[in-house]
Amino acid sequence: MGNIYVIEDEVNIRELIKIALEGFGYQVSAFENAEDAMDAMKEDLPSLMIFDRMLPGMDGVTAIRKIRSGSLCPQVPIMILTAKDKEIDKVSGLDGGADDYMTKPFGILELAARVRSLLRRSSGQKEQEKNIVTIGRLEWNFRTREVWFDKKLLELTYKEYELLQYLWKNQDRVVSREELLDSVWGYEYDGETRTLDIHVRTLRQKLGESGQEYIKTVRGVGYRFVGGKE
Ligand code: CA
Image (cartoon, rainbow, N blue to C red; front, top):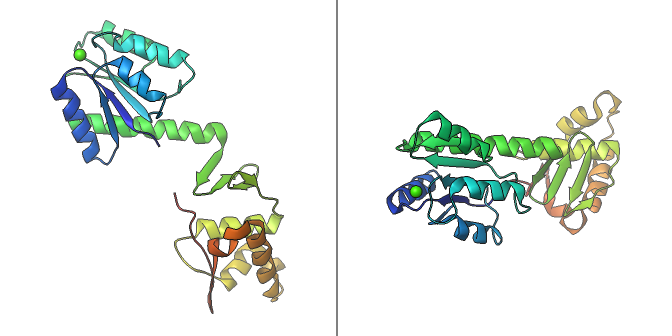
């Protein structure tokens, strides 16, 4: 996830926003004008942009229009800051393609809450659009039951997929062999634990050289999936 871009010509407000958002754990890049920010976007795409409306050179609304109609990151969530609180200004700010606005002066807690909500909304949209979740080197499409490892589609059998998903979902703990057999095989389980070992072995093979690392054997207990955290 890229930085939050803050574009504000008033140094005090710029620094205040930067320090405040950094205090909430975000990475922030601050710019005095829209032109510099748009240059920087070519190198590093922002996860969210906070534009002051009145800027020297290109104003915030024009910059937002350009970003929305451009090809770099037209979907980036954008908040506009405006010193004016007349209804007409809010409307034209949102018209330019901003997702949200705040009028100055504003409280830092409110700013942080809105930033959080914009980021959450945008990551939710992305997941919905693609239906794909990326975790570490694994990508999942839970709807089509496809899994990619290092961008390579894994050809998994039904049970291998179930097994991988179960281990992955429970990766904060060791999953016992009994639990795996019960959850993945259920009533089909005939007391033959060898089935499980064979599936784990083929699954590891399909994950390639990292297979052994990703699915750890915890001797005497069961298996644990590691390394797939966000
Ligand atoms: Ca300004």
